[in-house]
Image (cartoon, rainbow, N blue to C red):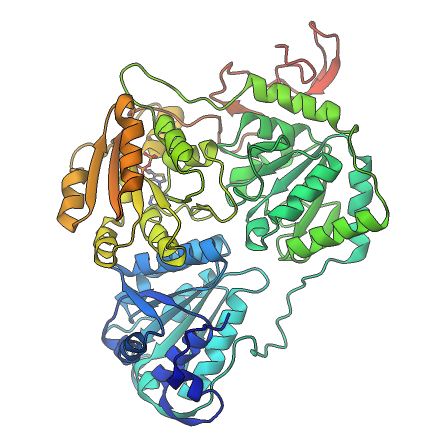
Length: 619
Ligand SMILES: Cc1ncc(C[n+]2csc(CCOP(=O)(O)OP(=O)(O)O)c2C)c(N)n1
Ligand SMILES: [Mg+2]
């Protein structure tokens, strides 16, 4: 990961120690760790570091992107990391600058994103005196970082950076905070660089390889199963395991469902794909999880938005749980076979064992099961509404996916996020969305980070009218640096997801969820920032509008006016079982588990559904 663009000056300092400041040590260490872009915002306590940054930029070692709000710096670093798998870096000053990073750190923490955040701090002597812009950011962020440091001596700077990068991007990744008192940045030391990968942390040794015994046990279960389901989460994306997931699924003919974080780990056009599961997952994925006899959880954490009522989640299944974080294994659901380690490594071990033992390819045992899932798919497909008087949000998203199938997509949070998850088939690392924290305002700055990381790719942010307004100031950053993010605002005039919950669970009392009054004219707004603004209201103009947006060589804001009261279905109400979805085309009422004879095909089923799992007939 060492940058090839390390300048001569930096190279020269490689071995010889010489007098340098703490700020120099910091910037030099970042360059040595391959950092090309830093997203940040200056202020008093971090000025010594920005002064050194100025010199590094002048040398062409890296580029600083001046965001308009520190929250955006954190999200941009996060997007950068998700698109590349490399550590994203952001800077903020002490006090309000640092607290503005908090939401971004929490977002990265919940989704296990490698990030290093560097904050300025008041001078060492002033710490604890309530000095101007003093805040204990180390303390504030303790529960939302993987690790954190206050650098108390400039001599520790290079080692601290090396450790922070190592911690952020090994084991289960996560954000690491480095708080730097102002005078540590100015302090001169005999600087000895620390090379990447040389951090010594004897107490930190994440397990990478899986234990052979549970791997054998897992293979035994895989040979016996008739109704298996692979449930693949963000861990598979992080460890770049999409190829191994595919090989294992194909070998045993296992259908594959992904979580919101796992989107992109398995091609949804593959015949074994059942799409996303969980609260707004496909009906067939949620039925499959309710009926499977073996659940292979791969880098997933049994999140409540996935499991619904935990007792009833995959209640007929044995569980194999593969995860790098031992704390996740058994946290929500005790597995029959726990395997701790890196997902890709473990899947490779399993595939090797299959070869060594000549375990034959399964072509028959799961066929009945796959046919059942296919019938559910036919019965309960995802639906794109075509209203006579308005364009539906789903239509806009489908058209985007059609015209830009290989783009990197970021989203904000709400209905548009769920529709984006449902209707576009993403490649690995092409789906970038705040999943665990559900952070509105994430989409545009994250897209900025993606665009800097992969400048030759198309980057599209699918936003909502409410979410977009949470970080719209970043249009200025896009304009300043010519960052070619295409933002599509799915404009329904509401906090649509809140409106849907109020309609469904609060007897249509729409408390503070309408965004109609006070919303800006987005085309004018874009213009004010020097960004191309477009609006589309009619289905007949949609195709051309998206084509024009994609063809524009610069940032674009497309305001897509859609049906105001569309609801996102299927939906599992909170606390309900996955099989009890609402909003299905036939709106089935779930039955109690019991033996039921189907009047159409005669099959005797033990089913929680109100249709025959064999032939799909209504029971
Ligand atoms: C920072 C933040 N505040 C509040 C929420 C709660 N919330 C979740 S979705 C949503 C509405 C989002 O509206 P919009 O961006 O217009 O998307 P839509 O649902 O209409 O597609 C709200 C308020 C949140 N997730 N994040
Ligand atoms: Mg909205």
